[in-house]
Length: 474
Length: 98
Image (cartoon, rainbow over all chains, first blue to last red; front, side, top):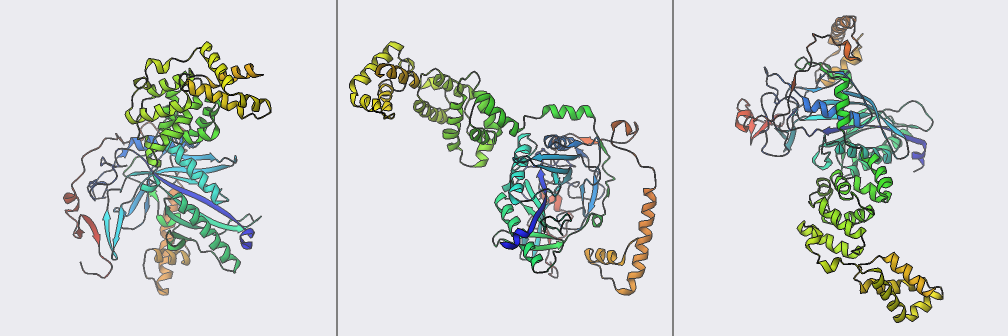
């Protein structure tokens, strides 16, 4: 480990995010995932000569929205460029991308430490097709070809794997929240390339970088960075030199292997795409898009804590899933103790949606109005926390109002006189607990309160019972 | 100016064989092409930063609505592909007969 103390990690990230438009970037073919191979294609997206691509307006809007959500400046003049390279996943032998006039630039994402990771640019481009390798032969499926992607490029601002992982998570939540992508890493709709170099601590000059391509699992991104950082440190320490190259991370063996010579920008022979005219937008349109954005989840988290008084940890876990956070807000209107809502959501609702996808899609439908009725009963002290939990489970099974399960008698809370009488009974029938409490055993009071709660089936206010009993015995 | 090293690198990326006797000529030829392209850069540059700088008659914003149009069938897409196999475009391992 000693040599690692000598070298500082310097890393930058390029994140590709598939936009959730209905159609491809330059033609009306569907972007639907899966389906028969080469069946979501037309002459435009397989690059036949003589076709004229036309850009999808929603893809432009979504890119601008992604830029606004990550504090970017929006370019009012932008254009598409051709990036030339020959590979079977690219039928035209060039990818339509953006080079010197990207739609968004100079943004940032702030980490919890307060450090800002600068975003150099966000540009719009088309995805490539999918290659299936079998016995050395290649089978090509162009269904994914030409689906709109944004590429979010940071400056080399990362100094640790933890910073990179936090950034990816923040970027994912931010983009998912504005609804321009589902950001499903497991389905490949969000993938990362990491540029890594190392330099002796205190040095100003960056070392030679390598790029690990196409990673779509947070766990493996962490492991790949650690591996590549260690590899470069060891190489330099043995007097070797890092070669600028593209690497693939082999998950099963936890190693990186060389993929191909890294090409510099000039090798791609970028030039303006002659088939697509420039994209000109107005400050007014950008402002309209800014107004249309939902609240940022991190701002929302802080607001949940201050407005609803729920714990920071609970707020964090709820805002992570936009639909559930919306459900929470709809449910706690006019509710005195929103904490009850947070508790029930986290303890009962989340248990019914074990996977991330289920929570993200809020697959378990329950009416906010019904949940609000349950929370109102809790506020009024007509239900105990345990009763509410049992009732909530029933409501989740059948999506009915809590009143469907309660009789009039269930909801009639004992009046103050009855509570007083029950408290008297509790004291009279539990003299030992009274003695214990007086002798300093605070827990003994719970026995007395518990007696009353049991007798009323939890339908009275615990704090009031406690207060009444204390008055009687002190 | 294009250097011999750059020509060799481009040749490598393009999988072209280039020997010492051709290198001189190729380097000079590529330099000439780049010189010509640089001439274009001397033309006045527009500042595209502000909306007003885009001329009124500029051809911009040929934009399509995000509406799904029926795609071609798998058979139609592969109709002119000589090496289709199992519904895919197919590339045989180099040297293998199709």
